[in-house]
Image (cartoon, rainbow, N blue to C red; front, side):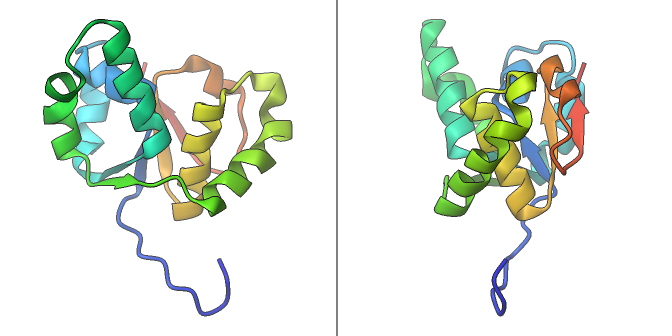
Amino acid sequence: MRSGELRLRVSSIVLDSSAILALIDEEAGSDAVRKVLRDSTVSTVNLAEVYSKLDERGKDVHDAAAEVLESITKIEPFTEEHARITGWLRRRTRGSGLSLGDRACIALAIAIGAEIYTADSIWRQSDVGCKIHLIR
């Protein structure tokens, strides 16, 4: 953060798309996500992943995700700062196999000083400077 820049911390939790989909689908781990939903933020990149997965399944993306998305505190646009952090994470997570969407989620959490909730067990191998909660 630059000197003199003030950042409002709206949420202490960032949700990965896998956590949101687990909640929508009532999968294992959805209770953990439900408990933090009202204190959560999602990146527009991960929101795009959620909509894409729902569309792949033939679901109406707006109806299927509406209830969950209404409960999320903030939908955060993917910014130039997030892009820089996402790029910085590439080399550091290459061995973990994290996708661009995964790194965008982590970048948001780093930028706002939040913890992450995810259903992706591959994240277990990542040490990226923020706390990661595996929901199952």
